View: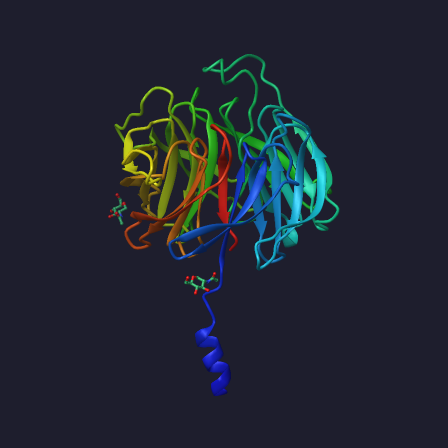
Length: 390
Ligand SMILES: *[C@@H]1O[C@H](CO)[C@@H](O)[C@H](O)[C@H]1NC(C)=O
Ligand SMILES: *[C@@H]1O[C@H](CO)[C@@H](O)[C@H](O)[C@H]1NC(C)=O
């Protein structure tokens, strides 16, 4: 290599690590730059609408999708072109049914988006093959013949997440209101996915989010159940050309077997580490941990809810509690890991804060909070989701 070029490569600064965070109270998608211990705001975009929530990234195409729940206005999906500087250019804004809360890309070349709707009890698919021209493909609305075990939360079906399985052939959509995991098969039909069945969850558990883990030829699915604050593990058996079989392995507290949580606790996010060896769950409203304050002018310690980590036994799918660590503040509704599994970004909805926590890939232990930033304005309902541009 030419010496001048080598000198230039060695001197060039580490590439910026961009993080996106969505927040209700400032109605913005905030782009942040993580550089060592500094997390700074690069910019805010307001085109997602009144209540930005779930973000889905298509890294290969440099496209970010933002769902707007639309409590205070029309709900929508916004597509953005991302950039190295963190600025987001709006490609399209499509009005949709109220209350979209989670989405995932699926189909050939990630050309479709599946969306779960909470209040309106629906599942939808969209054609995103041209991100500048989003199109609704289909919408299915569900109903209940009567209220569920927890009537105040289970008055109707409440679809809360949409996750593609490791084969790319099935979507799993937990329904908190109906205590079901709704299963859709990815097909060549225009709609992209057809309902093929549902797995019954523990009555009154309220499955909210799910995550798959694979180990060799084995596949497991874990759900975090918001109403009972439990995790259910399933073994997933694929049959050729048929719907996979989900066998329940266990259900126990989000703090592990025998664990308990204070009244008012609501588990939220569940993620499997990139190496498939660990599972992390966030729990909201516990307020049992203390961490040093981020503000020199306020009290020395502040309250934090936890991120709870478990080791996955790849042979059996069993979970072993590894650590209960601070999430960085109150109401950790959403968090994500970076691709390497060395960092976790956590959105603290009641503290207008986003933090980055270091993570040991070998042990699965979360370490110190390496960086933090203020995201959101006003009381409560601040940042609810964050992810790395990776
Ligand atoms: C990261 O911070 C260092 C030290 O302040 C600076 O020299 C470098 O240019 C920064 N890199 C980026 C990509 O912002
Ligand atoms: C996984 O579980 C099996 C069966 O209980 C056990 O023999 C094995 O040691 C476990 N593996 C790990 C890594 O704990």
